[in-house]
Length: 170
Image (spheres, rainbow, N blue to C red):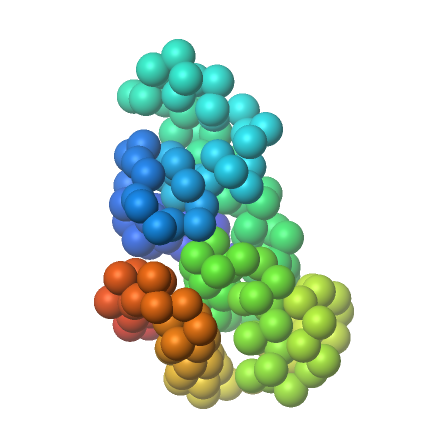
């Protein structure tokens, strides 16, 4: 079984650590440790944040549990064979959404890109050479970011951060 901890530690750095912020133009709105209040309004951690308990160990535990259950397990990373492949898909799922991350992975491994993780997808991901997967997945992510920026120029201010995040994970 793969280890969630290194994937989490790498991702939380990319998400800016345990900080509360809101970046103008960011579609996620207010976030804490990368968790969007807009997209996850029922997350238990918001209560602690609203009570200004930002340094709480409980809050950090809730963040880690959120990412493990909402992303790591849902994308099937716990069933993948190669740690680095699971980490890359996990990180991209946090950044771009689970369905988007899985569809890209499915395109790379040659299975139907439906964004759903089933046995076929896991078997194909587990059967691919990790080095080739990393290369092709990285290129696909860069293409996706370029598409986003070409479609909506207001998102270009995020491009350098997205590219740095993509290239930092290898």
